[in-house]
Amino acid sequence: MTTFVDRVELHVAAGNGGHGCASVHREKFKPLGGPDGGNGGRGGDVTLVVDQSVTTLLDYHHSPHRKATNGQPGAGDHRSGKDGQDLILPVPDGTVVLDKQGNVLADLVGEGTTYIAGQGGRGGLGNAALASARRKAPGFALLGVPGESTDIVLELKTVADVALVGYPSAGKSSLISVLSAAKPKIADYPFTTLVPNLGVVTAGATVYTIADVPGLIPGASQGKGLGLEFLRHVERCSVLVHVLDTATLESDRDPVSDLDVIEEELKQYGGLDDRPRIVVLNKIDIPDGQDLADMIRPDLEARGYQVFEVSAVARTGLKELSFALAGIVAEARAAKPKEEATRIVIRPKAVDDAGFTVTFDEANEVYRVRGEKPERWIRQTDFNNDEAVGYLADRLNRLGVEDALVKAGARSGDGVAIGPEENAVVFDWEPTMMAGAEMLGRRGEDHRLEAPRPAAQRRRDRDAERDEAEQEFKEFGPF
Image 1 (cartoon, rainbow, N blue to C red):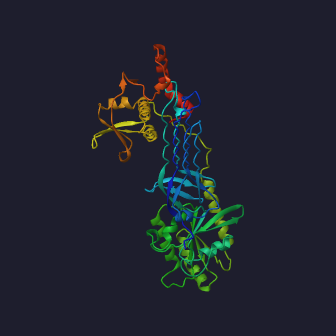
Image 2: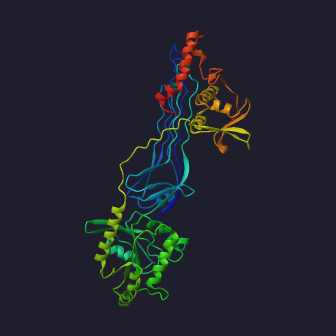
Image 3: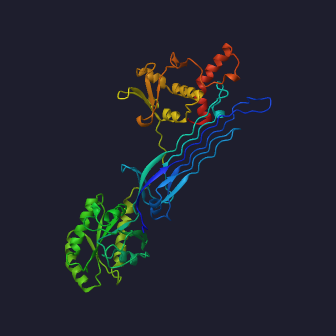
């Protein structure tokens, strides 16, 4: 049965926003008391959080589909819908988040580090929030926005200062057990260690973590044996320690060739050339092991390696090794740039950025409108409600979409598509502009609540129409 997983594909879906409510307050002798529809609730986010008590991605291996709850719809009497509950997914320290193409989205290191993998959809506004001086009783509400749904890959890269690498049965687990308080499973057959073992070592004033990386054999970087599964765990380490078996029972192996094979696998994996190396000749408590260590040590030192002779069983040479590793780790920590205080980066929108683009799609013979706001407004519109469609047209017109279509050469009856090609809303365009942004009609109004307007009132209404976008933003935020 699988007990350790360090790479999973996770399918996350944030909660959908609740729909706004279209409601009119009614009471005795007052059948049209004004709009009182509440807003829909926000959909829950899917958030990854580093938790030190979690050491594996096993839970997500068994249950790869995770979804946050949806926001509740609004109701009459100004009752807003309940927000969806955020889904918190604990992950081990050192988890890397990637997309399906392998691009790094986040590197989660440190207790409490978070990453929002799926943003919950915003709730739709009720008709009470949409009411204005010129639209006193809207007969529609905005729909909730669907939450983000995506596939991500989680990879666990062990956060350790020292990585022990070497052939199976070279004594890595034994070495980590005597250097630290770790209690790994130890035996004399290949692949005893099936998961990276972590231990904490104290050497003087320096405290560092040490990990043994299992399963490195020839061809590991191409997926042979267990090496490919665990090579990623050496990426964060400050120093690599080659543990060589000086008492191997295999006639076709010797410590120097073992070192060359492991170095070749590390080279093929890539990205580790800058890490300092130390060589540990293990099992010198065996007579033949000591003799072989004495024989090969000059050759290894001639290559530039710092060599230590140790015995995990007899516990000899461990103090010198632990202090040498502490020195390298301390130097690596000192060389790292200090973390700067969090800075707020302000990226103002360019003065010529309209927030959308209009292009002509020759293949489909439509004018395609792309932009975050127009596409979100499309998703919020109930196309079965003519008043809601008129409100959408007003919003697009205020944003400048109709002006842009005219400049792009669109004519009455031409096809216009808002959104990506695979999921666009397509309609035949009918211009609604006169002299720029002046509207022919007044869409989205409830004429039941209006009397014929004198000229002064019409002028005031035009002023209110001009200021409506700014007022909505102040009161309810960006739509």
